Amino acid sequence: MELLQFDFLRHALATGILASIACGVVGSYVVIKRIVFISGGISHTAYGGIGLGYFLGINPILGAVFFTVISALGMGILVERTRQREDTLIGIIWAVGMALGVIFVKLSPGYTSDLMSYLFGNILAVPFQDLILISILDVIIVAVVCFYFEELKAVAFDEEFAQVAGISTRFFNLLLLLLIALTVVVMIRAVGIILVIALMSIPPAIAGQSSKSLRGMMVLAIILGIVFNSGGIFLSYVFDLPSGATIILLAAAGFIISIASKQRFG
View 1 (spheres, helix red, strand yellow):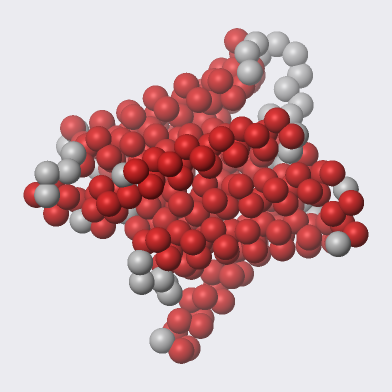
View 2 (cartoon, helix red, strand yellow):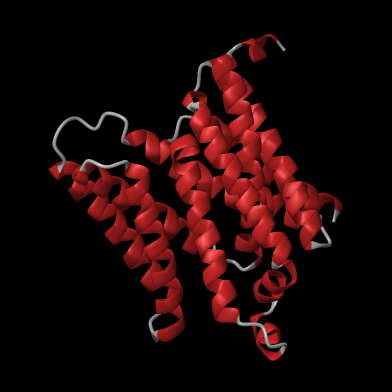
């Protein structure tokens, strides 16, 4: 409890809890629908927006919002309308986004000292304003999911059944991609691109092995996310390690233990 006397640690723990809610809810759809690769593409495309923000001298987050929303909608439309392989299109958009980010940063005037923080994040340096922003994101995500829970579940589990039932699969696929884009943008400054992908994939993947319902999977993914974030922050503080990398390795260890337990006990 002595650790909680520090403001930066309280902010880090609060950020971990709020990030776990957004990533646990959205990540459950990502894992069920098997679109982790798409979420990775959207996340890395944000790097191009950050570079554009530096180049134009505006808030890099505004550039990231533009790039991630455009890339999310672009991926959804291209995958639906073209005959190209889905993984090929996503890989191209992913690489182009990263390449544009590097070029924009190179052409930007001045010294961009904190650029790497967007890639790997620094959960120990989250300002209070970002906590408010992440809280607003959580409210939006939970409200949208509660309102369209059955439609999103049908599209995630069985798209053909959803079409037969009269559900607009195109609309809800794009809505899900937009939720992923918003999650990435708001979390990117706090936890970084790499940790966002980890939080959207590892806790829901573990939860999916033992949950019998989507709601149960979301709740368990949120709890696991909070455990991994809090445990990783504690271990990084005690052993003086990078917090984002520690959280990811702790979550990966949890995933390995989960798989081993599943094989051992069925």
